[in-house]
Length: 250
Ligand SMILES: [Fe+2]
Image 1: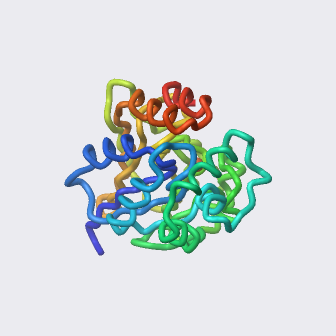
Image 2: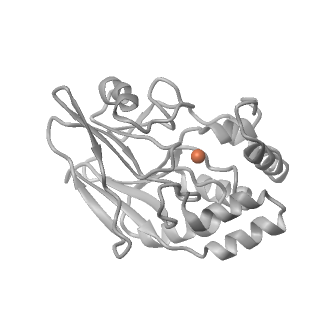
């Protein structure tokens, strides 16, 4: 649909307070919502966040945590802290929510003239941090604009002719958003950042809004009550490093 503004969420990681802050900031600015996976895992609010994403009707693909928690992937590649959170999360979720997670689409998934992936284009569990890792997605995607998650780093890559460019497109600490103008002929692999557990040094919740008709993608950061989330994590006896990293954004 022309003029559709797409709210792009990724790596929510069961953080309902961060999701609330994101939805408040984005209110009235979007028409459809897409979600790049890791709805749950690490955070204290798996049922609330799953319920909210389902109620919003967000087109959602699966992340590695969604797969591990719903039992369709084993946790041998998870570190002990992540595995403890997987076990805790699985015990919190209803059979119906676990079933919804198990049945999420794998990426790549095309919708609204964009393509959604969780990790790398050819492997949903691989990380894309470098231009060479971005090459597959930039070349192989069926759309000029592809969104990915998994790294929890807001930003991305663009490609023209034979050159991949790393895009430094995070808003400054004093700004809520920064806009990227898409150039005709250029291909993009863009990461909205993580709603629920940012790791790029900025602890604010991250998301993006894409307006392909006007060829603009906005990259947003919004503060939220991190202390409140940490308190719920400690009450739930989730591993302490998971609580501490929220404040660091690492
Ligand atoms: Fe994640």
